[in-house]
Every structure is written in C-alpha cells, then in structure tokens.
Image 1: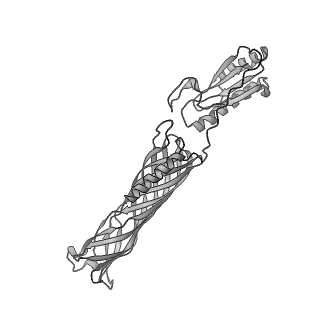
Image 2: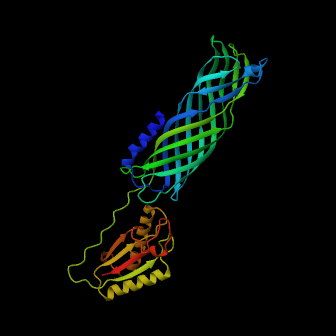
Image 3: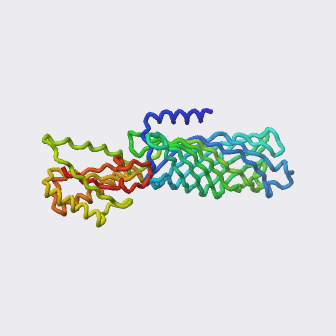
Length: 366
C-alpha cells in the first residue's frame, strides 16, 4: 500500500510541471528505481544432498521480503510512437522464510539477486493535443543471471538443513506498462512511472545439505518479479516549438493588391519540381514588372510527423524557394522569409494526415 501511495504522489507532483506530450524522435536515455516483489519459489533438492530423504524431506518453499529494483536504458524513438531500447537491470530481495523439509518451524536467511540485459520494444499512445502524459506498453526479451547468496534453511534448534548458493543464467522475458510526464522546464525530459513483470526460465543452483555441507546436490528455482518504478527519461535533440512569427504591419500608404503564388512540394521533400520552378519564375518576373516593395516567402508543412520536424522541413522549403527567386534576379534583401511548420494549414486536417495542399510555400507580392 505504501509503495502504491508513493507512486501516486510522485505522479501528481509531476503534473504541474508537465508540458504537452510529444512522441520521441531520436535517441534517448532513461533510468528508474523502485520496489521489487520476488514471488515465492518451490525448491526440490536432488543429488547426494537428497540421498536417503523422503520426498517431503527434500522439498520446500522459499518466500521473500520486498526488495528493490533499478534499470538504465538507451533507446531510439521513430517519431510515430514506436521505440526500441537496450536495458540493464538489477533486482535484490532478502529471504523472509523457508517452509518444508518435513520440519517446522524453519529459520531462514540469505538474499536472491537478478541482473542482466534486455532488449525492449515499446509503443507510446498519443492522446492528442493538450495531453500532459503519454501512456505506453512494451515487451522485452534478454538474458538474466539469478543468484542465491547463502540462502540457508535451519531447524528450530539452529541445525542447518540445506544451503542454496550460486547463480545461473537463463533466457528472460518481461512486460511493461507505464506513463511518461514531460517536464516543461527542460525540453526532452520526462518523469516516468511504470510496472514491470520480469520472469526467466528456471535457474539451477547448488545445494549443500546438512550442517557440514558435505552432501551436495542441486535444485531448480523460480524467478518471477513484479516491479513498481519511477524514473527520468531524456530525449536528445528536443527543442521548444518556435514562436509563431507575427505578420508584418501594413504600410502606412494605401496598400497595393497583393498577388499570391503557391509552390507545392512532394511528401517529406524540400526540392523543387519543374512546375515549382515555373511558378517561382512567374512570381519573380511579376515582382519586377509591378515594382513590389516586399516579397513574403512563407514555408508550411502537413501534420504528418512531429511539430519539431515539420518546423524544420518548412524552413528548408522556404529557403529553397528564396534561393530560386534570388537566382532569377530578386534581391534577398527584398524578401521576408518565414516558416510556420504545421501551424497554418491551407486545408485543416487531423494529426498525422498527409495533406498535399499543406505542403507548400506561399509567395506574396506586396
């Protein structure tokens, strides 16, 4: 209960700091820590340590106290909600009790640890404009070493019944459910809260029987972990959205009738087509014939991709058109070059829609 309350408190404390959620595009790093519950493990001793014992005398169950867990990760986001990452993790729990071995009560001590690497695939859910969090789910696979550090089962009189030691590496798998809360004060930084289930195939560990430990054997153990963690994640290359450039005030004199030319682009491109060069040529010729005093070159993009990427794409498109105008004799000083990203669509559309008429540069002669 205390762990759940701590996670909820961390979540609500993060909300006032949260910015609008954005999908990750590019590399990121993350780290988290929290509480770990290692499920009880059935053990059944085999080999010389179990010689002469009945089934009841060589079987038992190990229970664990709550422990702790930590992870670090390096990942990459594709800008569409899909992320992949490489993770290193560590978990540790102390033994609470051991039952079985046909003897009660049994005193117990020792620790269990798991550590290794995992490769994860995750998906972020886009909740739309204005959302201050991004829920996500994921799955992973990898390799984990599971270790028992002097786990001893003792009879009530102190006699050692069995000691389990050693470590064994096995294939591991996990499931992840979480949410990220972006921090507006630091672009790219987010607070994360998540639940993880991690399990492995059964490790096989050494067993020494009796007080002298001369009778040796082995046992398979279970390794199923439930972790609640909070952490931080930082995505590289995230910049705050640029302010919208205010339109220039109209001239004091009676303005002439503005002429507008639209230059369209292919999806995710900023190079000029033959038709685009023809339109730019007409605009350049008319600017000289009518004696335009101001030429506005405004780049735009559709809503496919992140706002940051679309801002840069609209800047490249505006720069390409301005360069062609200059090549055709229009002085660079006469141009006002602007970029609006996806903020001023010609045709309103939902996020993620590839709208051809929004992939444009507007040339306005004034």
